[in-house]
Length: 264
Image (tube, rainbow, N blue to C red; front, side):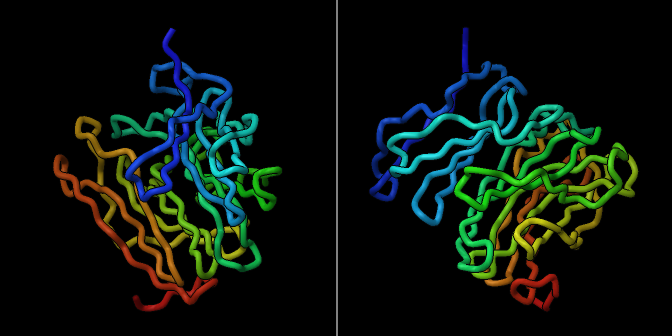
């Protein structure tokens, strides 16, 4: 029957041409575009030139690594279970995924070379935002660190996460949507920031009024974020009214490697 696989292809001429794709997933998924499907592959390049890829599938989050620039990859390694799967039902949204985002710390700081993976799952009975890290090029991984700070198992939904590692100060910056303390599908957007290598997080509010969502209007699949030298720029979609949507950008400025906000 129909299957899904993860492939990798590389360009060495700024995208003008690409090598023939190499299949890197050892175990296929189905082709339903749901929890049994392997998808959401996110590559990142390590400080030593290794290529890391993490994707979601029926076994959870799967990691693979190439040590020769992507010509060959090793055996798949399941690095984290994702209870509830990656295809997550969210009230007021037509669809939502908890698939992984992979990033590397290039800062030269104390966590230089760390590989971070950010995702969403329902291990506590509702969708929460998590991050994990490897300090040894993917050989071993930390446990799941919960990024959102609401009570465990309170049936409050968090969603649409994305990750950026500041290449100057090594801070770990996560955008996500949050419904804690709000009624119905009212939603706010938060920035979670860590200055200790993803071990602990402080949540910072993004100055956008809470908005309601409408599952009959396609909302999008991803948020975004970038960071450099203490500047952090989350990018996010939101409803303006019951029908119209918009994409907005927020700008934070922190004293590097701290939680101290400055005027941008």
